[in-house]
Amino acid sequence: MKKLSCLMTAFIVFILQSSVLPFVCDGITQPNLVFLFVVLMALHHGQRVGVATALIGGVCQDVVIGNFLGVHLLPYLVIAFACSYIGRGIDKDQWILTELIVLGATECCLILTCAVLFISGQFINGASYLFEFSIPMLAYHGILALPVDRVVWRLRRDDLYYGHMGYRW
Image (cartoon, rainbow, N blue to C red; front, side, top):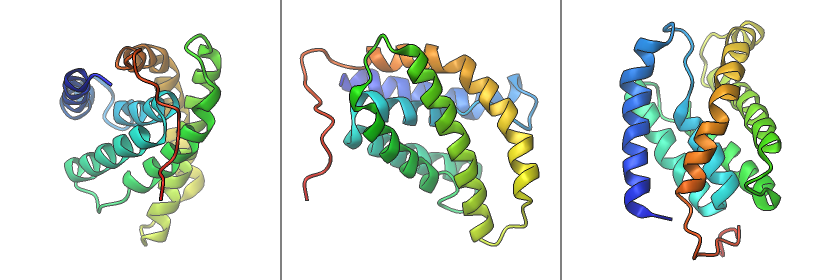
């Protein structure tokens, strides 16, 4: 991966997520660019890069938002592991499959976030939480998945073989 490009992209995503998108969107729901990058990095770059992106993105998002550590971190890690396993056979030209995986991962992340909040003792009505956030998040992520996918593919170096191998213990 191109390290300088990755660092600049991470900085731009962080600024967009924390400063620009809250003013552009309605304040209740907004697209989660960090989550999109976690899913797509895990799909296209393998388990090691996907889990590292999930760790960094989840911790940064939990710290910036001010929630207890784990509201974003745990769902991101689970989704990164699942997407890195699914992404072994995905090519650049399979954009419909990529779109469907992003939408499925979005819904799974909402369910996992609801479960983490419930387990932590927060008062949450699961059905209303999922109904209120599912439709806007699926629309936002459905629109943004392909442009973010192009950015993630440009971060990939063609002279390296990633292999989608897991950790060797």
